[in-house]
Image 1 (tube, rainbow, N blue to C red):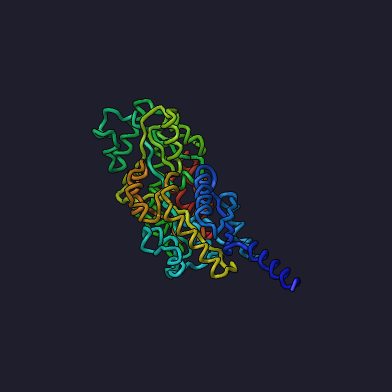
Image 2: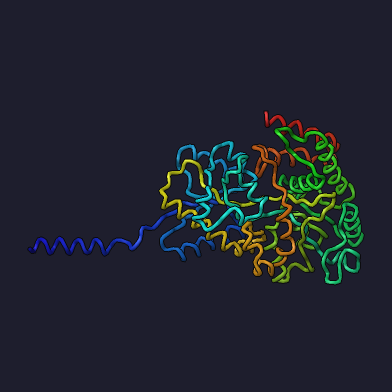
Length: 423
């Protein structure tokens, strides 16, 4: 009897020591640093606090090629994370490398989501050629036109409310650049002319605004797209010749030209909005600023864009309970993406993007229209972040617009160089 009592007591103690639930631990990888990293870590902390049955264990890896190389090698040896951030522009390469699992309608339902909840361009970029989803879009981030309004006071380019107006063509924009230079701007339009990303995004926007395509059916700059590419490079070259853009500016220098008041316009990603907001609040910006969608300069409304998204690596061994927990986390992130919008991004989840709260968020709401006309990189393994098309921008386009190649020669060289990558 004494033995039985001891056994029962030990059993009761063992039961008491067990958790009330089986916690699901999620291994999470992202490449988010700076303001994006701070916001994502805050979102993860909030999620973990609100979900005692699920714990996200986040790891931040180096952005760009190092991140995607790590994903590829980890999947190959079966040691990938449960969920990871992914650029949709890298989707074609990810599919070619077979590192991305399919996210089914049932998966979305487990997250409280459906494809109809997202902007069509983002869903298309997150899907393969058969329409199967391989990532859940989190945002749409594009280049926008930052404006130093002081250079245009009393001109036709500001309306009665002080908003940028009157730029409906390339001629209008270049008239504004000439006016800004006349009014003392050192760099009427600043962008990273000595950086692969800044150069490529402006080039791609100008190409798409002509209705051009970089890659079609496996051919680079097919047909009259070669002429359209040459025209885009010619425009950028002319801005250089006129002294309207900086000389081989690295990314940080291009931003500093604007924040110091030396540039009238700045073409850069929405991710710099927090920089401007913070400086304006601290009164260190020194001028009235705004940000708008890149105006339609060449007949077609289009702007280079990409998306951060959530993806599940291929081949990850995951119980149904673990997968449900992963989708719960993804769904929660989408529904709370108003916090992510504070980094300048447009939520890809339409219920948040069309909410009153986002509508009051400026300047995000002003340029949010670009979500409907976002131009993603072509569906090709040589396109996207940290890809050969970015290499071509810094190795071919940037030298051309600085006078080392004729625009037509640069376009042809870009075609030949990129086509060789597709052989």
